[in-house]
Amino acid sequence: MSEQTRPKIGFVGLGLMGSAMAQRLQSLGYELTVIAHRNRKPIEDAVSRGATEASTPAELASNNEIVMLCVDTSAAVEAVMRGDDGVLAGLQPGSLVIDFGTSIPGSTRALGEECKARGASMMDAPLGRTPAQAVDGLLNIMSAGEKADFDRAKPVLDDLGENVFHVGPIGAGHTLKLINNFYAMTTACAMSEAFAMADLAGLKRETLYDVMSSGPLKSGMMDWIKANAVDKDPMALAFTIVNGLKDLGYYSSMADDFKVPSFIAPATKNALGIAKSTGWGDKMVPEMVDFIADVFSDK
Image (cartoon, rainbow, N blue to C red):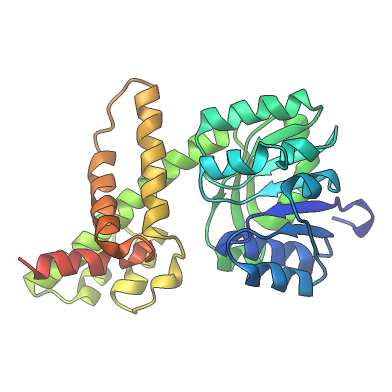
């Protein structure tokens, strides 16, 4: 996007992914406003690169054409959006809110209606890939909302993502992301157990990977789990077990809303839940292989 047409952006949520996205936007010359949440270092880093720090979400929203959210739960999105100092209180007519997190679709649709009541718009645009890829603008972005809003946001989204999709009306992005993450976490847990079972059987993990990856099971998720299981690099997938568990919970709630059972999600949710309950929640998903191997070694 040319410098003359770049919108001013307010960014809420400078965690691992949000910080990488903010860095990418600033490297391209976007004018950013940020706000502190849990950790000051990412804020100070963004400010050192030229960002402005706001004191409230309302202040941030009042001075920017696009408000980007990258926080971890639906409850956190709702807290940032609502209240006397929330984004909605400062949102200007014609502005656009984009939620990049993974949220409950019904909550997203409700917030979209509240934005519309203020003459503004909202999109959900959950992400695929990792913070390392975000720095290089190589994310997968599952955008949802009005087509006119998508068309307006697409030049910015193209600066953040390699593959930018419009998947349907508001809420469709979060629905697709929950299905995506259900499959991803199930694959991650299955591959982790496969490595741990190989240990018990006396098979080398490298041998298991070489054979399995030579056939149709080969996948990016397999490689991320192998990165920790074999190469001892858990950060190849910088996504925590507790976040994976949260997404499985949202997926299960969505299945309940549709009044259908999920046949597979309970097992994956159980594996992640037991890991969290025994102190592994803040570790990365590729470390599930270490957790399962520890459980097996106690038997």
